[in-house]
Length: 211
Length: 211
DNA sequence: GCGATAGTATTGACGCTGTCAAGATTGGCT
DNA sequence: AGCCAATCTTGACAGCGTCAATACTATCGC
Image 1 (cartoon, rainbow over the protein chains, first blue to last red):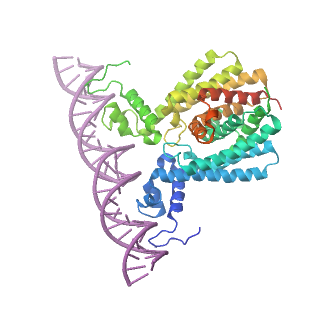
Image 2: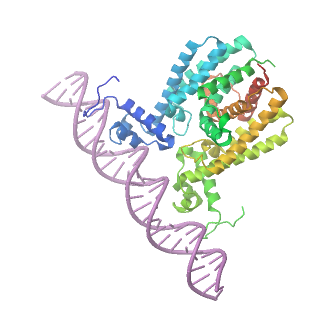
């Protein structure tokens, strides 16, 4: 965005971002296992060894993508918070935001917790991951303050995150299952965002319940 | 188990299972991205092209592993059902069973929903997946019958499955997070199975709540 | 007993991959 | 101007998945 249209210059201009974009494209098309540094370099119009100068190796590039996933999450969650009317609505919208980021950035989100291809010990990774989690924990805390002071904040936040992450992973199978095992008439066209909200409501009913 | 100890016979005896075992080993050690057909063949003591005669290609082998994941799940869930005292306990134990299968068979479970490396349209995959889901849906139905007839069975079952699947994926990060951001004294050594049960209780509090 | 046959495993080849070392090109600083 | 550091290319190497061709073996019909 900031630099000129590369053209036939020896220096690319903004190769790191071009590579990240190409990588996201490849992974979105073929899945994480279809990713290859050489293919990414090809799409960015540079030689096969160029990426190594900006990202040490394939793990370096994928780790940057994972951090970007958290950055997207952070941004979307901030927006959701601004739009919320109360604490319950806020948590519901955070859930929706989470899965919608996964829809918008499938490549980033498909590798963000893949410890075998991402360096999860990277400071950036940990910092931005913690930041995203912070949104969730704060929202759960607000719900607890308002509806149930005995709620285990950490456990409830983990449950929310797990449910949303699981939903993202399982959703394709849920669709396919509907087509295979359900009557055509009872097939829902409900979006994943709507399911996320309903998940949120179900969990929050549990959060409010006192022992 | 059924055949002789291979020794120096030209024919292996039970190569398919040997290959599956070796594949599970490699994936458990190095993650899905570290998997390679040639390494698997090496560990089974056969030539690099031998696997192709039993599993068409790497997707074929990994799909078999994914189906085995569902089989392990089916077995563990059946056991859990037998041990349960009531409908709520049954659902709780199913959750524990799910994550404990993932602990016992990390390789199988790390690829079971990876559509890019597994053929999720395979009849075996769909049949055994549906069977595992059946345990969960039936247990949710029992809870609904006893505590809340208005409960959306499908949604609640999906939420349970999502939460458990998400827990498995996020648990390593949860551990690391504790070490990084928590006071050493408030670090829990709670097992993933215990967390699964507490997740279950939290969700069930929501299932019981009527609007 | 014996040969045909189908099943099982090997060998070798191909193009693809990640990574490293060495060299070429460029922009900017002194 | 001249030099340096950053950037990119080229070439090489071993490892990978997959295919075709070949070797070996168990078994069944005779």
